[in-house]
Amino acid sequence: MTLQQAMIPHFDPIVGRYLNLDLFGRPHRIYVEEAGQGIPLLCLHTAGSDGRQYRGLMTSDDILQRFRVISFDMPWHGKSSPPAGWHEEEYQLTTKAYVEMILTVADALALDRPVVMGCSIGGRVVLNLALDHPERFRAIIGLQSGAHVDPYYDITWAHRPDVHGGEVCASIVSGLMGPASPEAERWETLWHYMQGGPGIFKGDLHFYKIDGDIRGRVGAIDTSRCPLYLLTGEYDYSCTPADTLDLVTRIKGADATIMKGLGHFPMSEDPAAFLGYLKPVLERIEAGTRAA
Amino acid sequence: MIDRLVETVNGKASLVHRGRYLTTRFLVELGPEAYLVDVVQGRIAAVTSGPFVMPSWSFALRAPKEAWEQFFQPVPPPGYQDLFGLLKQRLLRIEGDLQPLMANLRYIKEAFASLRPLEAKP
Image 1 (cartoon, rainbow over the protein chains, first blue to last red):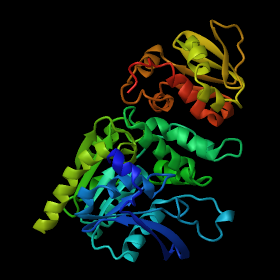
Image 2: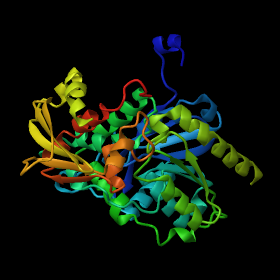
Image 3: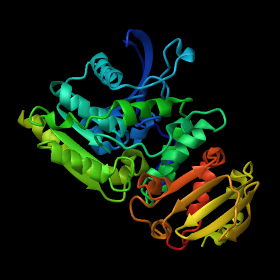
Image 4: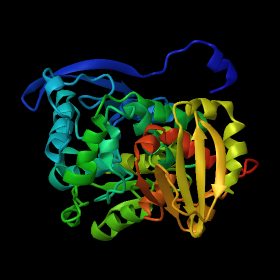
């Protein structure tokens, strides 16, 4: 963006709407954003954040000419409401609920075999989609994907009355980004964490650290049914490059690239650098779509 | 190295302001070297080097000297860019009463990051 463009008021090409649907047998109101036209590309945000993480993708003219980029805020996240009755519940994400949510939203939007791309918890759950629902997707992209994370800090600190939840959640994840990623983008990424509802990051980590351990199953992923691309930032010490490369040894045909300088939030901490890695993958997916 | 916190923290008004509700003493160990850091309302009041006899502190951060050396590089290698990176690698041990640490995690992380050489910051 030039300085002049920055100074003239203008809209991003992103349009957001609220989608009302039944999820897990209860009415939900889900916030969905999209931009562009073409192959549907459904994007899944990280734990404790929301769909704004994909702004860089949704403002890339180049991508928007060929892809319909869609992200939704998971229930309890961003501008999606928690379901009625939430005030008496403790939010906890499970593999089963996460998979069901993604398939239900994709159906509600009538997406025809979208590409699905998820980061962190999203990078984990796409492995479940590759295992159990490959026919639903034309390709799967995992960002910061690993089959398991060794717990290395006590997640109860993320939700206590004597520690500010927004401040601590952002401070827990702040170091996961590449030190050279642009300051403005890094702090925007952290702002999303600071805005998370109480206990939501912790509830997502239940899936990431406890319920979602998929080490015993990933070997059964059949990439001939749905191609699997893995992109991982080298500065991520939560899902490390080693974790992603371990997936490649277990999953025949999985394609992995380690992204230099980037960390755990490639799409939001440095969108320009990330797009340099993503575009070749999208081109291969496009070529596969044309061939089929 | 750790004694420089007096200049690097107190010289940054926004960092002192961020820590204004923190008054505590914590222990830092770089291998065999030990330091007690006194924080008073976000200002570093004193850094005392060991060895200590019967030190009192709220929380302790202990890592091998080599791990801290990597951490203090102007551009640290992957995994060494953050205290929690050292924690993940099981190089850093965090012990004691962690409430003051976790309630002021950004302040503590930025205090340690402020010890990195400025001129080479990306």
